[in-house]
Figure 1 (cartoon, rainbow, N blue to C red):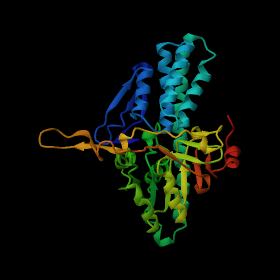
Figure 2: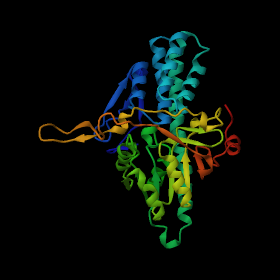
Figure 3: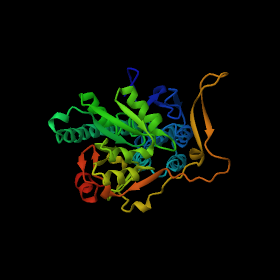
Figure 4: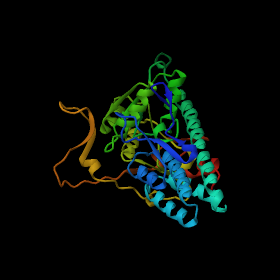
Length: 369
């Protein structure tokens, strides 16, 4: 996508395919920094520290991480150790396990000397498929936006379509285009008048730091809001549609996404506003029927008790720093995700079309793995 007139992806190969480069998302929006990862352990650290995040992207990064592990040693023992370390980094998002298992199926039957090249090729394929799926999601979501505008009285069709989104489900969360933001980019580039309400998304503020960054660089009109303002805006008739991404979809259509998504879905339901979830098929967990079996990641409580930002003072250059929000020793709880039941979801926007968020529609359109 676009940053200052230059097209970027969130991950690419370096050093003849022996390392990967990624954008350090912990430094955005104030600093644009690229990191080169040349070992599996560096990939593990990058995922753990949220240098890279977003369910589709960490799947791709994990695939390349396994390739780097095989570059170090292609043995079964080293591969199994790398798989365990990579999968343990983010237990909720299903894309990570899906991508790694796909690379394993590709390389396991091969001779040791053939494994690195095969792993690299499979990771490349997963990355390119991610781009294609996300662009298709954008095209399918654009048709929804157009239908919403077509329902308006003729004299109001030129007014901006107001979209509310939560967390970051843009190109920074994927390889390119994004999931929930992909239809927004397609709409903006088509000339549609569109405006985005951007949830700040506490406690990591990924809406404020990442989504707003993306939209600003693409030139999409947007307004940052605190998380709790969404319901108010819906009551005031200032939201036409809600669209979010997901970290895991159960086979029955329940949606696990960034904490706070469930509350947005409830508010949308109460105000008769459509609530869409944009996901590639790699985010669907075909083995999971009951959302209660999803392991919800609990993150460091310092994300709640501290906040990061750019600080300027009389003596130093502006620099990133953390400040305390609470008194020392305050107890905090920091679940990273919640689950929105399928009956609150208007539809899923996938690369294969707009589907009901239910087992019947999912099994009809997708072949079970």
